[in-house]
Length: 315
Image (cartoon, rainbow, N blue to C red; front, side, top):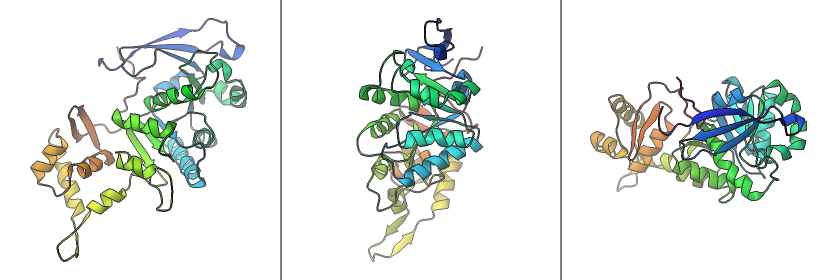
């Protein structure tokens, strides 16, 4: 087992809680730098071991962002992927309700103690009992909702999923800080590419390293990357770069081993700058990161493999 993968103990909580919590579990993690010391859950614990994606975004999301959220939830249902969300109004609530609509399983990461989620528990009682919705909290069971708890919950949402989809973000607040923190930890984060007239901060997150996607969650070119696909000579005539040739050259090289962005640029003598190469590598689904310092890329032998903070050592 890797030193970065936690061991997992499951303890049955004593029957001192309300009836609806009598079968909750307490998860204790060790040896993992980002994992919380305790997790309280209610529902189907098996969902923690299944493939998952997170959908996050603004509380005051536009209809475009809510439609995007609905589409990603539908995509998750079709791919038998668990939807993780934070149960705030706006994008979070839409993610949960859409997942239920499309018969996808869901994990609700609470910004409060699990014993204070009474109204929500009553609303989703049927799904919790049937095992399609799991409640999860890292806070003391009787802790009330607080802003600081909502902010502290965000890294847990990101840690539960391999892929994170951002419907809409401002340039501050929980979604913004969560994405920035996730990018710093080399998380794979997809951000809905905004229209030119949108006033959100989605494009800023893309410029910082998030992967732009269309309304169906499929990676597309960002404005900056699109600009790099064209160059101008001294006569201002546009010269088209042979994009497929450059991409194929990078992929063919990665099939032979592990390389940093600088090595790729130098070996292939590319006209793209290092930022453009890095964004392409993070967008291409077949490429995996094999080393964090410095980042090295290669072609993944198993693109379906998923590592989350809940991976368990297999004896």
